[in-house]
View 1 (spheres, rainbow, N blue to C red):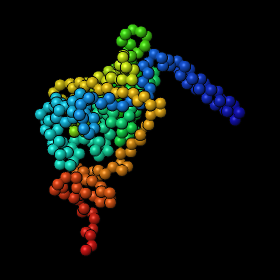
View 2 (view 1 turned 180 degrees about the vertical axis):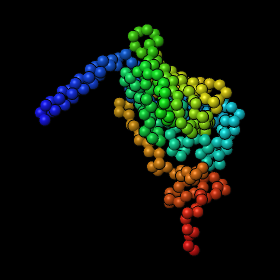
View 3 (view 1 turned 120 degrees about the vertical axis):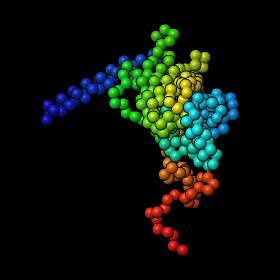
View 4 (view 1 turned 30 degrees about the horizontal axis):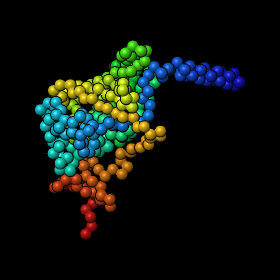
Length: 288
């Protein structure tokens, strides 16, 4: 028993030594300082409601999304449904994850954690989202896991040759859906063959401004769609990190393909004029 305990102790000490050695080997001075809380940098134009995909334009039709005729029709149907009180093509309205690329509009605060083999992007919106960008030199897996956030492989680059990384280039593939670009319901293709490319870097003049040059290649589009997103660092010493649990307090109830509203009294209400009630075949008629 003593021998087994000694072996276990030695193994534990060896494991700790390896962990400490790896931590010492990680020179964070080689990476840009991305600590703190990042918020969406709002463009100086009227943008009512939630953030648009292209931050330089208003949401909806003003985005001028390069959609194929099929997906333009779906977009128009989304706008019509929203005008009538529905959620349209925005899956976030009924608590499905926003996923990529829409999540990088950051409807809630973003945290970036840089480690040598993985950069983590945390955005608590609808759910706890931990986006992993692998920077360990791996190739695309043969059987990748599919997810709303996709599978991201990145590479840190030293563009000015000063021995420090200043740009993170990322490519993201292998999605599941449904997903949309923004709350107006500009949908990505149902085949989920989306490819998202990003260049993420700090502004040279303002280290509290973060840039994300993003290009989306998707079969719902007639051409790649490139936008330039910006994030500003909260200057508070101890910023507030909100917690999101979408079903908690959410008044939208989705039954089948229909959205209803839960009133303050707990009664199911229609969300649009003339909406039929849900199928009640498994309930006994109310006694009069």
